Length: 243
Image (tube, rainbow, N blue to C red; front, side, top):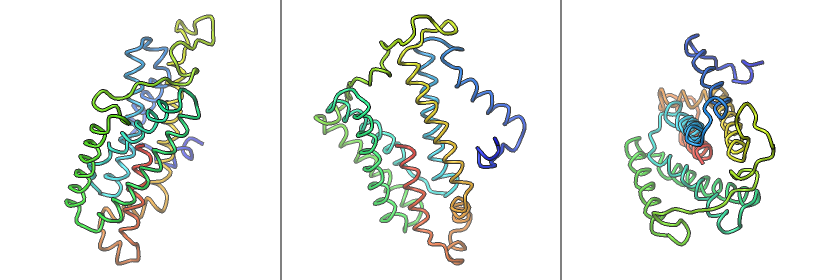
């Protein structure tokens, strides 16, 4: 059952397997093992960067593409939620609208970058993504009426995710259960689901083609695979997961 859940992608050594299990259990119980706002923020950042790195691994590790625009899509996701929440107010609807809008923008940008840039050599593609990311950073800084400029945006989350939300009168395992813990476990579940989805992708026939392109793109092209199409699909998927 567990093997199927992780797409039969088992660790190559028992030591690595034990370490991964310990990390998983530690993150799952982090709010109760390390109570406190700072510890919870660190654990939440670890979850976020796990997804970000796993998405980049699809692009670099499995496809062999170097992109400097990966964090741009990460920022688009954050700005999508923030802008929607400031315009629509706190609520699940604002989160949904912001997420959908961010995914749509990331899809269009990644598709455009891929189709127009992946026909060139890898070093030129890397430089193009660096230029696009720098342009996006400048836009985010200058369009302060939308992005908040260098100060960023301040917005409220839905009631269930706010620190003031305390559904239980008594503590659980010595920890007050509030909206921050709900936010953490929402992030934890999202992280697990996204990583499992990425495992399924890289262990699918599509993932095997990406690895073949990484090893020898000319041979992959010769046996009938359209390298540009597969690289573009990999770039788009990586951007969507990063967002």
